[in-house]
Image 1 (tube, one colour):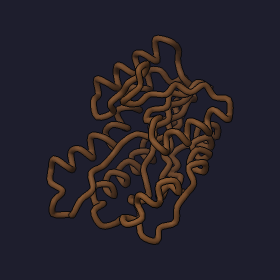
Image 2 (tube, helix red, strand yellow):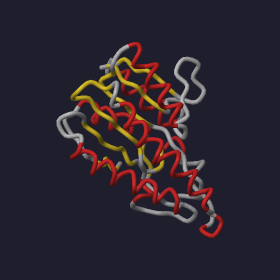
Image 3 (cartoon, one colour):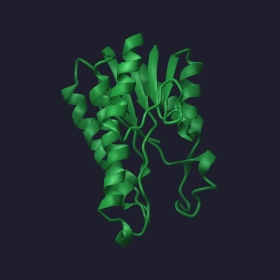
Image 4 (cartoon, one colour):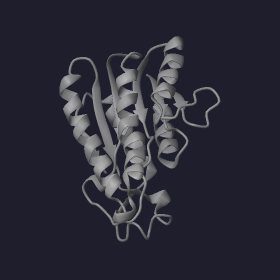
Length: 202
């Protein structure tokens, strides 16, 4: 399959790219620092430019996203600006990616997004991430019905990556971790299966 991957440069992104390539998929990697396919998912025009650039070459069979960030901080310090930053990136950025990329995904193709454990197991300083992840998961489930017969859509909702466990140990004390390879295989499942409307909690 030909797959557009957005957010391919981070820890999760590299694991997902490796898993897809191992399955012999043709992966088009897009991220902020890419020379060929740069994208800023907080900017709808940047997403449009990416979709246009990819579409000029060929249609794709799937779009996968490992992109999006949310601010963290004490509840009282997270003002409207912080909230807007989280919404614009991980939530609205991925929503906009799906909306625009329907132009270049073949009928029967799929979208796989990324949410996270905070949708169901919040931590201190993570109220924005909890809300954004929860909203994204609800949107994916709702969208699956409306896209039925045209596209499939799922989201991967991982806990802390094993590869990043030391970095986030204080924020996620005692949380089980998941290997990046497992996250990658979950994306493979979403891309290659017939499932839709799924939240893969791993």
